[in-house]
Length: 209
Image 1 (cartoon, rainbow, N blue to C red):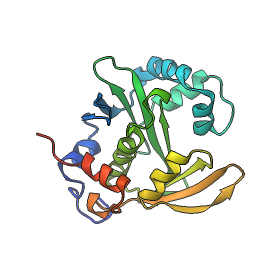
Image 2: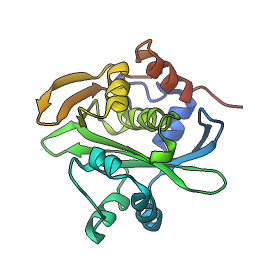
Image 3: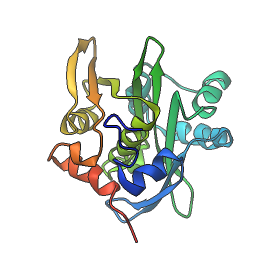
Image 4: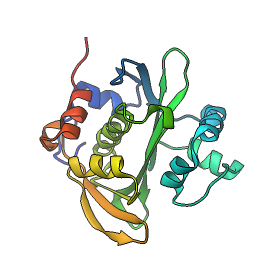
């Protein structure tokens, strides 16, 4: 059920996301991509994609120098229950090269809220990858009882700051080099702001013949 009590508030595509069924879409440059839930067998893909990230992209994700993923981190990122820890990835077709990952993790002390994070491969930045992944996170949240997404975004990460603000995110303050944001999950696509990002996320849920 969604926050509005309507299980179909995000439409057929939202129901597909809630059920963990893959989506195919096209990026701004015409690249065909597949979005799907992360699985344990994605560990090798994670390792390869992480190795290709620039130092800046790694810093944006972890807010520290992070030269490699430990076995424990790799397991944590790929063994998810898709209920309290929801994670989706995107790869291009047909090469199946990873382009981005987004996830939210329910807060133990506030079960209707979750912490979110998004990582986009350097070569795929500026193509709408982050927008599509955020859209999937939003649609996956209401059926699982999550109404609020919170995240920490580096002040230097202008594209992500702009995306979250265009989706109605509220700045909670700044701690060091990062801004804390919260994004209330709308009951459906019609609740998104009339901004470029809002329109782009709504387009994700248009039924494609």
